Amino acid sequence: MKPPNFLYAAPRSLDEALTLAATYGGDAMILAGGQSLVAAMNFRFVAPAVLIDLNRVPELSYIRREGERLHVGAMTRHRALEFSQEGIDAEPLLARVSCEIGPLAIRNRGTIGGSIAHAHPAAEWPLIAVALDAQLTLRSASHSRSIPAREFFVGPFRNAAAAGEILTQITFPAARSNSNFGFCELSRRPSDLPIVAVACRVARNESGDCSAATLAVGGADEVPRHISAVEQILIGTRGEANALREAAEVAAAAVAPRTDIHASANYRRRMVAVMTRRALAQAFGLGGVGA
Amino acid sequence: MNQPIDKVAVRFELNGELVEREIPARQLLVDFIRDDLGLTATRVGCEQGVCGSCTVMLDGASVRSCLMFAVQADGCVVRTVEGLADGATMHPLQQAFWDNHALQCGFCTSGFLMTALDLIEHQAGTGEKEVRNALSGNLCRCTGYANIVAAVQSALAGK
Image (spheres, each protein chain N blue to C red):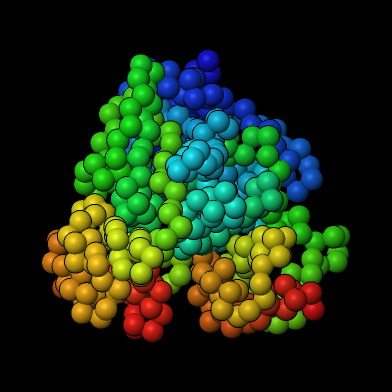
């Protein structure tokens, strides 16, 4: 099908976009990369009266490190994150994940901010934002506020932004040098959305013991879930098999997966355990343990 | 400030020629290329960004033309399959598809060619696994992919 009629605006600056968002409020939708929104409009799942296209707002596309933080503009395309040296130096997980998102043509066009605002429960960027405890900047014509990614996702395809607010920036903590990431996803083909995905980061002290850990699960609940209990299980360990197994079971028990055409709830829960164990094994540098 | 409007002016370069029209804002890029400009090599398959048949090059990067409005191409350089050949001489990619029997019904071929063009212009690796991953966003219901993968590998290797 074709999208129903709408009024189109292509602001040239963020200020102009915010004014338009304030003027049209809930009648307007924000067009970022369009890789989900335009498909939804083609299906007529959504029919915004006004479409505010951010693709001509260059100030929203950047990858910039400031001290221990990496700021990513919401209109930064997946493909840019795949190759940004500044991004790779600050948090290599971002580039690792970028190349898993859709096929090439989707990565060329899709944006990190669009993916996060879309809030697909299985998508990679919402998972990574939750796993790494990213801060999201929401701007409106009258204010600017920061919200943790862990509070931003309120349900499938639902986020905490109010009408008139635009997600402008995603801020990740720069990875510490004593810390490694793990990322593992289950999907039928390389370019598909994952059925279940797990991202984690594990920090270790000089003697090799885990000193901090963060882990999140995507695709197994209404929103990506930060599994906080995993940290207590892992601290002080070196990724021994029984610790990873316990963390995997805790993660699997913490989510409430649903059955759909892609996988049953039970299968998803089992795969959360498997992907958790593999992702943690990666983060602990235990190549062989994962399988 | 630009007020939101439903009729928009669009002007961009398509296969080396300037295109200028007034169109509805809701018109998809692929429909503009096919219906208004009459270039029908770019196919409309799924209209949801899954099949890859509508892939075109936009400012040197492959994109889905069913997931873009034509107005968004304003000021850009767009290339479709019609711009590949040099007169009667096929582009090396097209020749590789010919040599490797990489098409049957042909519906998906333009999408594969434009995706492969992105790989060639960005010097992607020639390994089979890498090529298969890179082509995973394009669906073909005839060939079973083997000959398409071989064609793209041979074009990437410059053979």
